[in-house]
Image (cartoon, rainbow, N blue to C red; front, side, top):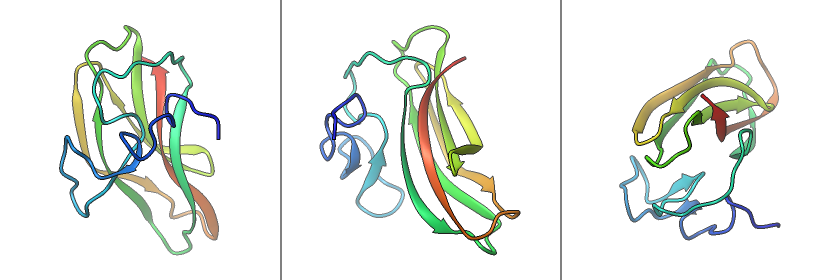
Length: 131
């Protein structure tokens, strides 16, 4: 696996970790799609993203849900924002924006999948977008 801004510290401040700076809502671990440690810098461009996905049978499922904490450092570039989204087969079904210097708690992001059935790839994506 090639290391990049989203994979260079897997298990330490990225990926599935036991967090040091926050308490998970349930369980001992979180999945971090950025970096838990403040001040880490990387060169990124709009459209760069990290995501975690898995195949899920969503037959007879109405909603796919996720609880998120989106923290954007204050030194983020003007005109850019971080977007967290629920994706199904690569398509964004629900999304929210994180603005520079703000933390956003999204207790229940939901995607309506009631019209779908069978196995689909479901995930959470963190993407740098133009605001």
